[in-house]
Amino acid sequence: MIGIFDSGIGGVTIFREILKSIPKGHFIYYSDSINNPYGDKSKEEILTILDNIVTKLIDMGCLIIVIACNTASSIGVSYLRKKYPQILFIATEPAYKMVHDYNPQGKTLVMATRGTIESEKFLELYHKYDNHNTILLPCIGLAELIENNGNVSEYLNKILGQYKNIDNVVLGCTHYPLIKTEIKKVLSNVTFYDGAKGVTKELLRVLKKYNLNYEFAKLEIHFIDSSQNKFKEKIFWELLQ
Image (tube, rainbow, N blue to C red; front, side, top):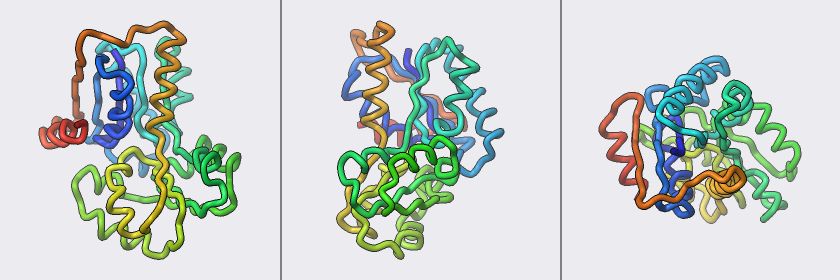
């Protein structure tokens, strides 16, 4: 069983990519919407939350767990790997290196939670591939707005309106790919980069390295939402299509 978790339904953007390569896998998706957003919480709060989720997924039979959340990955993956050495963790990273690979000279905007942007893991990545033409933008509250179907357009106009001639937009939160259309309305013709393909590639590499079976007769997906919100489950299945 492969576990996937996020601070809500945003991780579906990674899950959709995983399903392209593992169309008949057995998955548990854990949506922790009761604690959304992670990005505005302290490190100690986040680690406690992650402990609780990972314990639940292990009890349900998960041997490999995808952290489909940039904030949780940046802050917690090293801690989780040390505490649960028997579990294989696949982390999500903001796709800043992709800018270096595909358009290193382009004016770049990194949209992420405050927790991700301030994390040691992200800053190490940023300084390694800094194109000296990058703006780091902590989008406080945006993941929560997306999660709760809030007024995203008004928010984006306020925080993005001052940025012009942007070439690259790094979507450093798994919720943000859900609002690409709205972002383009403000920034016009930009190229988006996110971590979904990289996470999928790493998951496949680890599964093959440890010779773990991931192909079954049929696809099985179990959805769990920590707030037991039926609306979240409805949106999850709609977005997964």
